[in-house]
Image (tube, rainbow, N blue to C red; front, top):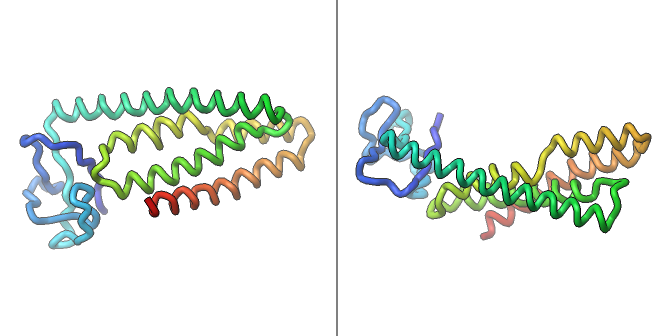
Length: 185
C-alpha cells in the first residue's frame, strides 16, 4: 500500500522517512509526486512518507482549511448565481440550474483532479481548494436527489426519470471529458 504525501516546499527540518522510521534515501515510491518519478521502491516494501515537524503540520493544516474555505465560498456563490440565472431564464419545472451545475461540476472535478494530480510543481493546496472546496460547495448530490424526489412527488415521473438518467449519463461523460482535457494539458 502506498501512502500519498504532499510536497509543500520543505524546510531543512523535514525528513523523508519510511513508516518504520528508517531513512529512505534513494528509495522512491511508484509515483513520487516531488520528483514525478515512476520507479519502484528498491525493496518493493519500503514506502516513503513525509515526516513533518509539529509546527509545520499546524501551518499546513491551517493553509489546507483556508484553501478549502475559500474554494467553498466561491463554489457556493457560483452555485447560487448559476442556479438563479438558469432558473430565471429556463423556468423551474425541470431543474435546469442544478442539472447544469452537476454537469459542469463533473467536468471541473474530472479536469482538476487529473491536471493537479499530474502537476507536482503546482502547490498541493489547489487540490483542496478546487475539488474539495469549490466543487464540494458548487454541486451537491443531495440537491439532485431532492429535486428528483420532488419532481416524482408532483406526478411528473417521466420528467424525473429524464432528469435522473440524464444527470447520470451526461455526468459520467462530463467526467470523461474533464479527465481527457486534464491529460491533454
